[in-house]
Image (cartoon, rainbow, N blue to C red; front, side, top):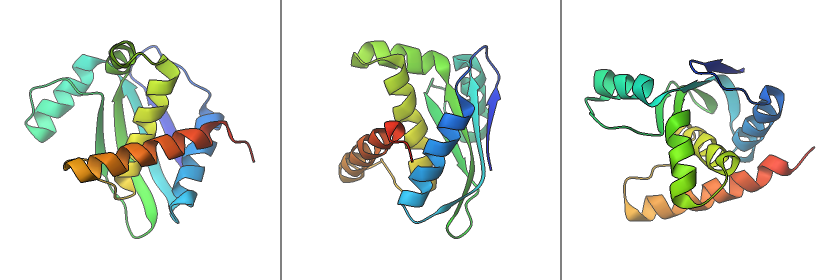
Length: 138
């Protein structure tokens, strides 16, 4: 089950996003377990970053992995503030950057990494592939 939580004044079409995220998991031969997307502020996510990861920096996303087997479960925290700023920096729409970050989180849960240059290239390719799925209706 995919659930969306809002720690900030923010809304999205939950059924559309839930369907898309489910299809992303299915496209990688996995099923959705308990998947939570939590939308928050920079300060909220900075607190999590400091408390749980000992990092004192702003970030757009933090993903906590609770997957078992091919069942995708986890908590994906997204700073709406960072997504807005990154959209401006990367010269893309807010919606496009939000989709990239949301796909990025579930891709981590599906086992994709981005620490090495090679892994980052694959992650970006997968992000683009999954973003293309957003507008495809079944």
